[in-house]
Image (cartoon, rainbow over all chains, first blue to last red; front, side):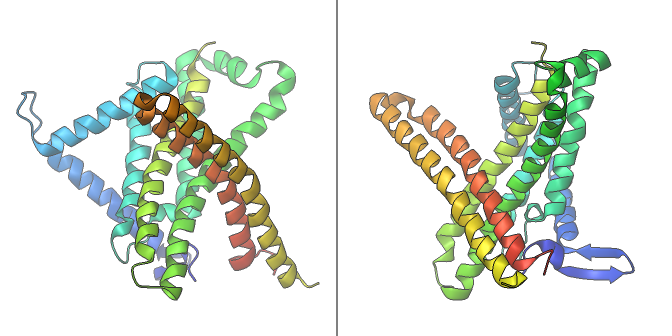
Length: 222
Length: 79
């Protein structure tokens, strides 16, 4: 049984391998870029807007509101990063109702890459907001300097848990469907696939919110 | 006991033990949410959203156990 889409290899020469994770990630990137290009090509400020513009406005405003609720700050600088994470994970999870599609988030390489992006975004945003010394004082020497090692461990364990949480949820969803397909292939996998769609959307939301929480911890002053 | 049978037992223990805590926690959370909705039916939407979020957090602890179990079964680094 294939545990992750990493094991489905389409093309290989030397150390360069094209596996299902890469191919489906490219597919999602293509879809997202094409969709946003088509929509933003003809934006209009009037009240008579196209469906796509309506969708994008709802998405961007909703993400901004969530960020504001979590961090109590102006959402503007965070919307591009958090929104990209959310939309990419949500699309890659929700497309799994297409037969033959393997969600790239079901591979530990994808989720680890996303978590590492968060790992580097936290100090970037923190230093930009509070300066180098302010960031280190605020983020690593709280509540006392003796907590420094635990704070450092916390940074890494946070990243690992982000990656493993998303990977485990998506992978276990596809795996349960695969097991059910081999023992009771008629109708029975359908409700579990529907639940997979629900957990996929929730996991995308949770990933974005957790990324925002750790960024907010590095950027707020008190 | 060779490494293969030890891995199978360890996988069973990993997922079994990891299911206990989140099970209790999710039961608690859902019970409190139902009590909250019964007391204040107009707050149902907000309670449901928060409940789903917290349930997914607890769920992820079991998922860690599941990942360890699956790694032991299908991608064992020692066998």
